[in-house]
Length: 328
Image (tube, rainbow, N blue to C red; front, top):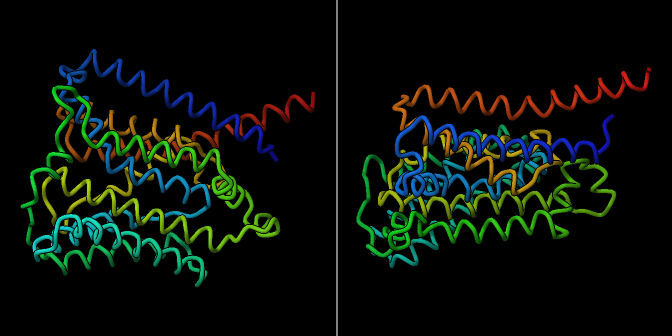
Protein backbone atom coordinates (compact mmCIF):
# COMPACT_ATOMS: atom_id res chain seq x y z
CA UNK A 1 0.00 0.00 0.00
CA UNK A 2 1.29 3.42 -0.90
CA UNK A 3 2.45 5.49 2.07
CA UNK A 4 0.65 8.65 3.17
CA UNK A 5 3.76 10.64 2.21
CA UNK A 6 3.57 9.42 -1.40
CA UNK A 7 -0.17 10.08 -1.45
CA UNK A 8 0.47 13.64 -0.30
CA UNK A 9 3.12 14.06 -3.01
CA UNK A 10 0.62 12.96 -5.68
CA UNK A 11 -1.95 15.43 -4.39
CA UNK A 12 0.65 18.21 -4.27
CA UNK A 13 1.56 17.45 -7.87
CA UNK A 14 -2.15 17.51 -8.73
CA UNK A 15 -2.50 20.99 -7.14
CA UNK A 16 0.40 22.19 -9.28
CA UNK A 17 -1.17 20.64 -12.38
CA UNK A 18 -4.48 22.42 -11.69
CA UNK A 19 -2.70 25.77 -11.35
CA UNK A 20 -0.90 25.12 -14.64
CA UNK A 21 -4.18 24.14 -16.30
CA UNK A 22 -5.85 27.29 -14.96
CA UNK A 23 -3.06 29.39 -16.48
CA UNK A 24 -3.37 27.49 -19.78
CA UNK A 25 -7.14 28.05 -19.89
CA UNK A 26 -6.70 31.78 -19.38
CA UNK A 27 -4.04 31.95 -22.09
CA UNK A 28 -6.10 29.95 -24.62
CA UNK A 29 -9.30 31.81 -23.79
CA UNK A 30 -7.62 35.18 -24.18
CA UNK A 31 -6.36 34.25 -27.66
CA UNK A 32 -9.54 32.58 -28.89
CA UNK A 33 -12.26 34.72 -27.32
CA UNK A 34 -12.78 38.44 -27.48
CA UNK A 35 -13.24 40.23 -24.17
CA UNK A 36 -12.23 37.26 -22.00
CA UNK A 37 -9.63 39.41 -20.24
CA UNK A 38 -11.82 42.51 -20.20
CA UNK A 39 -12.36 44.05 -16.78
CA UNK A 40 -16.08 43.26 -16.97
CA UNK A 41 -15.56 39.57 -17.70
CA UNK A 42 -12.79 39.13 -15.13
CA UNK A 43 -15.09 40.76 -12.58
CA UNK A 44 -17.87 38.36 -13.58
CA UNK A 45 -15.58 35.35 -13.19
CA UNK A 46 -14.83 36.38 -9.61
CA UNK A 47 -18.48 37.28 -8.92
CA UNK A 48 -19.88 34.08 -10.41
CA UNK A 49 -17.54 32.02 -8.27
CA UNK A 50 -18.63 33.76 -5.05
CA UNK A 51 -21.24 31.27 -3.86
CA UNK A 52 -19.31 28.26 -5.15
CA UNK A 53 -16.15 29.39 -3.35
CA UNK A 54 -17.98 30.14 -0.09
CA UNK A 55 -19.61 26.69 0.01
CA UNK A 56 -16.45 24.91 -1.17
CA UNK A 57 -14.48 26.29 1.80
CA UNK A 58 -16.65 24.17 4.12
CA UNK A 59 -17.27 21.27 1.72
CA UNK A 60 -13.53 20.54 1.57
CA UNK A 61 -13.58 19.69 5.30
CA UNK A 62 -16.59 17.43 4.82
CA UNK A 63 -15.11 15.46 1.91
CA UNK A 64 -11.73 15.15 3.66
CA UNK A 65 -13.58 13.72 6.68
CA UNK A 66 -15.10 11.07 4.41
CA UNK A 67 -18.58 12.57 4.10
CA UNK A 68 -20.50 14.60 1.51
CA UNK A 69 -23.45 17.01 1.45
CA UNK A 70 -25.58 17.17 -1.68
CA UNK A 71 -28.11 19.50 -0.06
CA UNK A 72 -25.94 22.63 0.01
CA UNK A 73 -27.70 24.30 -2.94
CA UNK A 74 -31.07 23.57 -1.34
CA UNK A 75 -29.84 25.07 1.94
CA UNK A 76 -28.73 28.10 -0.08
CA UNK A 77 -32.17 28.54 -1.63
CA UNK A 78 -33.98 27.95 1.68
CA UNK A 79 -31.78 30.57 3.37
CA UNK A 80 -32.38 32.94 0.47
CA UNK A 81 -36.12 32.34 0.64
CA UNK A 82 -36.18 32.98 4.39
CA UNK A 83 -34.21 36.19 3.90
CA UNK A 84 -36.67 37.43 1.28
CA UNK A 85 -39.77 36.28 3.18
CA UNK A 86 -38.58 37.78 6.49
CA UNK A 87 -37.78 41.10 4.89
CA UNK A 88 -41.10 41.14 3.04
CA UNK A 89 -42.87 40.53 6.37
CA UNK A 90 -41.30 43.69 7.78
CA UNK A 91 -38.17 42.40 9.49
CA UNK A 92 -35.13 44.72 9.39
CA UNK A 93 -32.65 43.62 6.77
CA UNK A 94 -30.00 42.81 9.37
CA UNK A 95 -32.44 40.52 11.19
CA UNK A 96 -33.46 38.86 7.89
CA UNK A 97 -29.76 38.15 7.18
CA UNK A 98 -29.30 36.60 10.63
CA UNK A 99 -32.42 34.46 10.14
CA UNK A 100 -31.12 33.25 6.77
CA UNK A 101 -27.75 32.22 8.22
CA UNK A 102 -29.42 30.63 11.26
CA UNK A 103 -31.62 28.56 8.93
CA UNK A 104 -28.55 27.38 7.01
CA UNK A 105 -26.75 26.49 10.24
CA UNK A 106 -29.76 24.55 11.51
CA UNK A 107 -30.05 22.58 8.27
CA UNK A 108 -26.38 21.66 8.47
CA UNK A 109 -26.77 20.52 12.07
CA UNK A 110 -29.78 18.37 11.16
CA UNK A 111 -27.79 16.70 8.38
CA UNK A 112 -24.88 16.04 10.74
CA UNK A 113 -27.14 14.67 13.47
CA UNK A 114 -28.86 12.23 11.10
CA UNK A 115 -25.55 11.02 9.67
CA UNK A 116 -23.61 10.63 12.92
CA UNK A 117 -26.16 9.91 15.64
CA UNK A 118 -28.41 7.65 13.57
CA UNK A 119 -25.60 6.13 11.54
CA UNK A 120 -27.16 6.94 8.17
CA UNK A 121 -25.04 7.42 5.04
CA UNK A 122 -24.37 11.06 4.21
CA UNK A 123 -25.16 10.46 0.53
CA UNK A 124 -28.64 9.12 1.30
CA UNK A 125 -29.37 11.70 4.00
CA UNK A 126 -28.37 14.70 1.94
CA UNK A 127 -30.20 13.49 -1.18
CA UNK A 128 -33.35 13.45 0.96
CA UNK A 129 -32.44 16.80 2.50
CA UNK A 130 -31.90 18.23 -0.98
CA UNK A 131 -35.56 17.58 -1.83
CA UNK A 132 -36.82 18.52 1.64
CA UNK A 133 -35.16 21.93 1.94
CA UNK A 134 -36.03 22.98 -1.60
CA UNK A 135 -39.60 21.80 -0.98
CA UNK A 136 -39.80 23.98 2.14
CA UNK A 137 -38.48 26.93 0.11
CA UNK A 138 -41.24 26.31 -2.43
CA UNK A 139 -43.75 26.22 0.40
CA UNK A 140 -42.52 29.57 1.73
CA UNK A 141 -42.39 31.52 -1.53
CA UNK A 142 -44.28 29.37 -4.04
CA UNK A 143 -43.95 31.03 -7.42
CA UNK A 144 -43.44 34.46 -5.86
CA UNK A 145 -40.26 36.44 -6.38
CA UNK A 146 -39.02 38.99 -3.87
CA UNK A 147 -36.72 41.52 -5.47
CA UNK A 148 -37.06 44.64 -3.34
CA UNK A 149 -34.00 44.95 -1.12
CA UNK A 150 -32.06 47.96 0.19
CA UNK A 151 -29.72 49.45 -2.41
CA UNK A 152 -26.71 49.21 -0.11
CA UNK A 153 -26.97 45.43 0.09
CA UNK A 154 -27.71 44.81 -3.57
CA UNK A 155 -24.81 47.09 -4.47
CA UNK A 156 -22.58 45.05 -2.18
CA UNK A 157 -23.60 41.87 -3.93
CA UNK A 158 -23.22 43.22 -7.46
CA UNK A 159 -20.93 46.27 -7.67
CA UNK A 160 -17.15 46.54 -7.89
CA UNK A 161 -14.75 48.81 -6.04
CA UNK A 162 -14.76 52.07 -8.00
CA UNK A 163 -13.77 51.51 -11.62
CA UNK A 164 -11.78 48.36 -10.90
CA UNK A 165 -12.79 44.79 -11.80
CA UNK A 166 -12.71 43.73 -8.12
CA UNK A 167 -16.18 42.74 -6.81
CA UNK A 168 -17.16 44.06 -3.40
CA UNK A 169 -17.78 40.47 -2.28
CA UNK A 170 -14.14 39.51 -2.93
CA UNK A 171 -12.80 40.68 0.48
CA UNK A 172 -15.40 38.48 2.18
CA UNK A 173 -14.28 35.50 0.10
CA UNK A 174 -10.60 36.21 0.79
CA UNK A 175 -11.30 36.49 4.53
CA UNK A 176 -13.15 33.17 4.63
CA UNK A 177 -10.46 31.57 2.45
CA UNK A 178 -7.69 32.64 4.82
CA UNK A 179 -9.64 31.56 7.91
CA UNK A 180 -10.58 28.15 6.54
CA UNK A 181 -7.14 27.65 5.00
CA UNK A 182 -5.48 28.31 8.36
CA UNK A 183 -8.08 26.14 10.08
CA UNK A 184 -7.35 23.18 7.80
CA UNK A 185 -3.57 23.42 7.58
CA UNK A 186 -2.44 25.05 10.82
CA UNK A 187 -4.74 23.98 13.64
CA UNK A 188 -5.54 20.81 15.62
CA UNK A 189 -9.06 20.95 14.14
CA UNK A 190 -7.67 20.56 10.64
CA UNK A 191 -5.32 17.78 11.69
CA UNK A 192 -8.22 15.94 13.34
CA UNK A 193 -10.24 16.29 10.14
CA UNK A 194 -7.44 14.74 8.10
CA UNK A 195 -6.98 11.97 10.67
CA UNK A 196 -10.69 11.09 10.61
CA UNK A 197 -10.68 10.92 6.82
CA UNK A 198 -7.58 8.73 6.70
CA UNK A 199 -8.72 6.25 9.36
CA UNK A 200 -11.82 6.93 11.51
CA UNK A 201 -11.15 3.95 13.81
CA UNK A 202 -7.57 5.03 14.48
CA UNK A 203 -8.82 8.57 15.11
CA UNK A 204 -11.20 7.25 17.77
CA UNK A 205 -8.40 5.30 19.44
CA UNK A 206 -6.33 8.50 19.40
CA UNK A 207 -9.02 10.20 21.49
CA UNK A 208 -10.79 12.18 18.75
CA UNK A 209 -14.55 12.52 19.19
CA UNK A 210 -15.40 11.61 15.60
CA UNK A 211 -19.18 12.06 15.99
CA UNK A 212 -18.91 15.55 17.49
CA UNK A 213 -16.26 16.58 14.96
CA UNK A 214 -18.39 15.55 12.00
CA UNK A 215 -21.47 17.31 13.41
CA UNK A 216 -19.39 20.50 13.68
CA UNK A 217 -18.26 20.17 10.06
CA UNK A 218 -21.81 19.54 8.81
CA UNK A 219 -23.00 22.57 10.82
CA UNK A 220 -20.16 24.67 9.36
CA UNK A 221 -21.22 23.57 5.90
CA UNK A 222 -24.81 24.61 6.55
CA UNK A 223 -23.70 27.98 7.90
CA UNK A 224 -21.53 28.66 4.85
CA UNK A 225 -24.42 27.65 2.57
CA UNK A 226 -26.53 30.20 4.44
CA UNK A 227 -23.86 32.86 3.87
CA UNK A 228 -23.78 31.88 0.19
CA UNK A 229 -27.58 32.23 0.11
CA UNK A 230 -27.33 35.79 1.42
CA UNK A 231 -24.66 36.72 -1.14
CA UNK A 232 -26.63 35.03 -3.95
CA UNK A 233 -29.79 36.93 -3.00
CA UNK A 234 -28.10 40.31 -3.03
CA UNK A 235 -25.97 39.57 -6.09
CA UNK A 236 -29.04 38.83 -8.20
CA UNK A 237 -31.36 41.08 -6.16
CA UNK A 238 -33.91 38.31 -5.98
CA UNK A 239 -35.20 35.59 -3.67
CA UNK A 240 -37.12 32.77 -5.31
CA UNK A 241 -37.53 29.05 -4.76
CA UNK A 242 -35.73 27.91 -7.93
CA UNK A 243 -32.47 29.73 -7.25
CA UNK A 244 -29.16 27.87 -7.22
CA UNK A 245 -30.23 24.73 -9.10
CA UNK A 246 -27.20 22.54 -9.77
CA UNK A 247 -24.73 24.52 -7.66
CA UNK A 248 -23.98 21.46 -5.51
CA UNK A 249 -22.48 19.74 -8.56
CA UNK A 250 -20.23 22.71 -9.27
CA UNK A 251 -19.05 22.89 -5.65
CA UNK A 252 -18.23 19.18 -5.44
CA UNK A 253 -16.59 19.27 -8.88
CA UNK A 254 -14.41 22.20 -7.82
CA UNK A 255 -13.34 20.42 -4.61
CA UNK A 256 -12.42 17.19 -6.39
CA UNK A 257 -10.83 19.10 -9.25
CA UNK A 258 -8.75 20.92 -6.63
CA UNK A 259 -7.23 17.68 -5.39
CA UNK A 260 -9.53 16.65 -2.54
CA UNK A 261 -9.80 12.86 -2.51
CA UNK A 262 -13.34 11.50 -2.83
CA UNK A 263 -12.17 8.73 -0.47
CA UNK A 264 -11.31 11.28 2.24
CA UNK A 265 -8.16 12.03 4.20
CA UNK A 266 -6.38 14.21 1.62
CA UNK A 267 -6.88 17.74 0.29
CA UNK A 268 -5.67 21.33 0.40
CA UNK A 269 -7.58 24.58 0.58
CA UNK A 270 -5.34 26.21 -2.02
CA UNK A 271 -6.02 23.43 -4.50
CA UNK A 272 -9.76 23.90 -4.00
CA UNK A 273 -9.49 27.64 -4.65
CA UNK A 274 -7.66 26.86 -7.90
CA UNK A 275 -10.32 24.29 -8.74
CA UNK A 276 -13.14 26.81 -8.23
CA UNK A 277 -11.37 29.39 -10.39
CA UNK A 278 -10.72 26.79 -13.10
CA UNK A 279 -14.38 25.71 -13.18
CA UNK A 280 -15.57 29.34 -13.26
CA UNK A 281 -13.06 30.28 -15.95
CA UNK A 282 -14.07 27.37 -18.19
CA UNK A 283 -17.74 28.26 -17.68
CA UNK A 284 -17.04 31.89 -18.65
CA UNK A 285 -15.00 30.85 -21.68
CA UNK A 286 -17.73 28.55 -22.98
CA UNK A 287 -20.40 31.19 -22.33
CA UNK A 288 -18.49 33.80 -24.32
CA UNK A 289 -18.11 31.25 -27.10
CA UNK A 290 -21.92 30.98 -27.05
CA UNK A 291 -21.82 27.30 -26.13
CA UNK A 292 -25.27 26.21 -24.92
CA UNK A 293 -26.03 25.22 -21.33
CA UNK A 294 -26.33 21.50 -22.09
CA UNK A 295 -22.80 21.33 -23.48
CA UNK A 296 -21.48 23.32 -20.51
CA UNK A 297 -23.10 20.79 -18.17
CA UNK A 298 -21.41 17.97 -20.09
CA UNK A 299 -18.05 19.71 -19.73
CA UNK A 300 -18.63 20.04 -15.98
CA UNK A 301 -19.41 16.32 -15.79
CA UNK A 302 -16.26 15.44 -17.72
CA UNK A 303 -14.15 17.60 -15.41
CA UNK A 304 -15.73 15.85 -12.42
CA UNK A 305 -14.92 12.40 -13.82
CA UNK A 306 -11.36 13.44 -14.62
CA UNK A 307 -10.85 14.90 -11.14
CA UNK A 308 -12.01 11.64 -9.54
CA UNK A 309 -10.25 9.22 -11.88
CA UNK A 310 -6.93 10.95 -12.61
CA UNK A 311 -5.39 10.81 -9.10
CA UNK A 312 -6.43 7.15 -8.76
CA UNK A 313 -4.89 6.29 -12.14
CA UNK A 314 -1.69 8.12 -11.23
CA UNK A 315 -1.62 6.22 -7.94
CA UNK A 316 -1.99 2.86 -9.72
CA UNK A 317 0.66 3.78 -12.28
CA UNK A 318 3.18 4.72 -9.60
CA UNK A 319 2.45 1.56 -7.64
CA UNK A 320 2.91 -0.58 -10.76
CA UNK A 321 6.12 1.25 -11.58
CA UNK A 322 7.44 0.75 -8.03
CA UNK A 323 6.52 -2.96 -8.15
CA UNK A 324 8.36 -3.36 -11.46
CA UNK A 325 11.46 -1.68 -10.01
CA UNK A 326 11.37 -3.93 -6.94
CA UNK A 327 11.12 -7.05 -9.11
CA UNK A 328 14.11 -6.01 -11.16
